Structures are given as structure tokens and as C-alpha cells.
Length: 117
Length: 114
Image 1: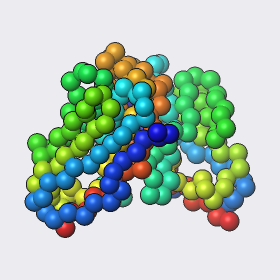
Image 2: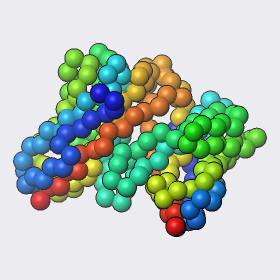
Image 3: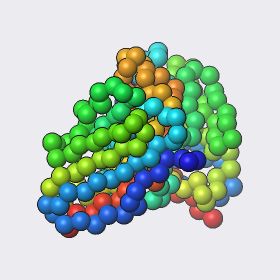
């Protein structure tokens, strides 16, 4: 595809339910990032995947959050037992390499707007 | 990443140039200066980046102070579509296998008046 895509665009769920958010990065990009943006706040890093390496999970806010990346391409962010404070826009980004290259551009998807009632 | 300071908001008139400032007084010699912007209800998009020299691309220009402690993003003719939050971000080499995730501050909300 031409850019990073995410699905669903919007998700409304009830407190306590599990949700899965999907990200399709740009073809060939080995680095994939998840960020979260709460209402009126800046973007907060969640997790980073690079090729087949172990992911950097240092930004995940709790053990209710997990993510997978299958086959080095599509990624799924899972939030278990959702809480109202999980309501936010979840953004995915990819870049061609990611490793140790501070000049590299990240390309963002449109985000998934999650509302936990 | 070193800290950046930006004004919370700025206003501009349509078709006039806009200069968006960013202070980064603790910048290190290997920090790259990146600008991203986020249009309403969209994900951030890359605008421009530089290290020491001024940079131009189709979207904007980046003017970097000689001591690199500040920089200015220049939109030569603002349009209504340029209304967005503009983020100034410093990125360094923090390890060969490090992810170089972006650290976003509050950014500057640019409002463009017709």
C-alpha cells in the first residue's frame, strides 16, 4: 500500500472488554512503532519492533497492554480488560530501518480512536 | 532526547510567511532537529529535518542557528491547510539497535486566518 493503514478507525467498547487494534506498515519497512495520544495530550511511545529482534516494550503502561508483529509485517496491539483511562487515539508508525539512525523519517497511520465506556 | 521548548500557539494570516521557533539549548553535537506536524484528526507527518545547515524542501525551510541552540521552521506562504500542531523534536544516535522512537512535546498550534 501507499502508506501505513490502521483498523478499525474507531472502536467503542465497554470497560473490562478486550480490544485488538491492527496496523499494516509500509511494505518493506522493518521498524514499527505504536504510540498513544490521549485527549489534548502529546504522543506517548508504547512499543517498538525491529525485524526479528525482541521488541522494546519500555513504553507500555501496564501488563494489560501487549503487541505482536507477525512475519515482520502486520502488528496487533491488544488491550485486555480495558479501562476508561485507555481511551485515546492509538497511532502506528513505520520506518525503513529504525536502528540507530536519528535522521530517519517515521510514517504514521491515521490512528484508531478508542473509547472505553 | 534533549528537551525542546516551543510556544503553545501562534496565529498567521493566509498567504503570509510563518516562522515557528524552537529552543533547544541543551542540544548535543549529534542531535538531529526534526519537525513533524499533526493536522486535525490525523497522524503526525514528517515536515523536515537538519543537523547543522539550513534545509529546504517542498513543504518548508529549516533555519538552524549557528550555535544550534535554536531553530526556526519557515512556511513561506501559509494556507488554511497548514493549520496544525507543529512539533520540534531532537533525535540522537542512542545505540545501534535502539529504536529512535520520537519523543513529542506539546508543540505549537498554528492557526491560519483567511
